[in-house]
Length: 175
Image (tube, rainbow, N blue to C red; front, side, top):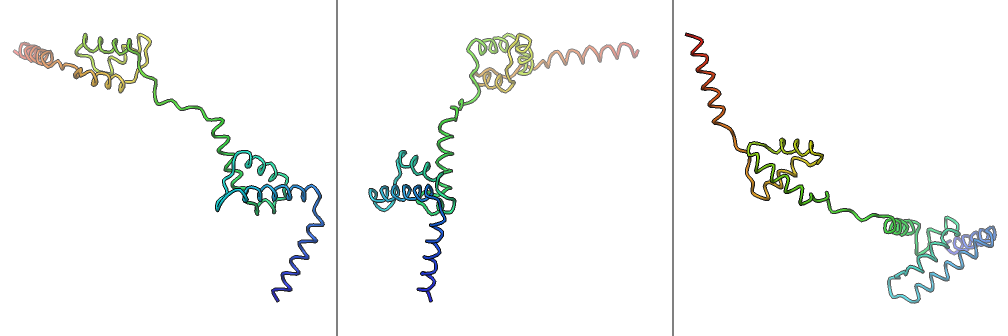
């Protein structure tokens, strides 16, 4: 039974071969010859060079769809090669991060923080923005921490003085 089945399948494939165009047959022969050449020069696993890939990719476009799937280079492999080629050609080098702050701007931040001990990071940021520099508060904080400039001085004495004067005024008006 299997012999009859194989004979029938072979006859049907011959009939299908007769129905194909001559260009399709030529493309398949070229692809098969190139695959055989690649397989002859390799050991167990074929390693394709770039010229081999280019030839096989060009011939795969000519082959009929059902024949493309039976080659050593599948359509998925062709797509993978194309994606890698495009990714290598069109990618831009990525910058390592935000651009660094200039030394003159760092010096200005340090000067503002040291001359105005009661100013916080947000106040320094506002003053820089008024002078035309856009710097994030977190960047100012990192710069001040790196240079070991402490937090702004709290003005407890002035608050106590205000409360004392206010309490004295209340007591004076009450009597």
